[in-house]
Length: 384
Image (cartoon, rainbow, N blue to C red):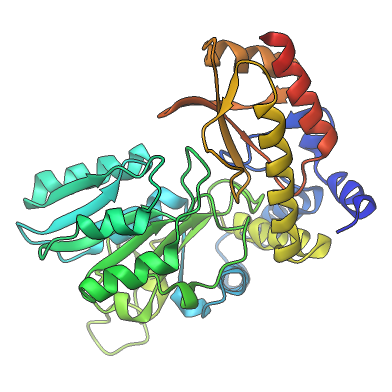
């Protein structure tokens, strides 16, 4: 990816015209082609009649196109993809669809999102399930640490591919191999909020059971569309959590039943023009460069930011080395992280604070420029 093509590509994103944006881990920015595709799709539905035969056929088509595009990104079969609203919805489908029994054990980490943790706590309360939280924050050997805490009662392991608070990439393939070697019946649910759209992925090679993701972060798609990958083997034990007409097989014999593929975990009416938007968002990024090139750009920018931050007085990055992702978390010796983030946003520099660990997080995308990073570093140096 050369600088000219990147600059030309950035011009497609209105949000980048008047600010330095470092919040891709929270929500990405939409390109003009994505916005146009969404608006035109809504207009098409209204002109054609929202509940006519023509539009009903169109909704099925755009949903399948979105599944196919996501399947291509993850290198899986489209039949293994369920369309959801976001990561948390995908995690809930997997969590609540498991055949829980009293005494079952869930192993999770201290770096999981609060929404997922809360769902696990409610499962414990309702079903008499127990859980253990492994301390992965700054752990040097995540695989060994997790393996130590597996028990004969462990039914599910819940981990993130990329830790949302530090940017650390877990060795997912190695963890999967270790867990399955301990007990092949244990399922692994992966929170993929910070990996999909940023790094090249092959879920078949990773060997995951459940992989929940969203389109509104690194994919730069609209909020309200995400997905869940369920392997063929895991689908055999995962019951539908939410049930609606989209999950049912109306062509089956009397009594119907659920569809055999990933659609069995979908529910009912959705904002289908958003599926069009996500499909276009992924295509827009592919037109700039293939994902491996985009990921290289992300890691180069991340290293540049990490090095720059460590040179500033009173600033310390959370990880001891540059993360292999676009998420860079750092602390200020003087504290006051909320105040600093608020002050920088008034200057057109968008960051966010985290509560665990107490720090500031800056996210660089392939869309980020070195000039933006220099602007951020200079601003941090001046606020002191």
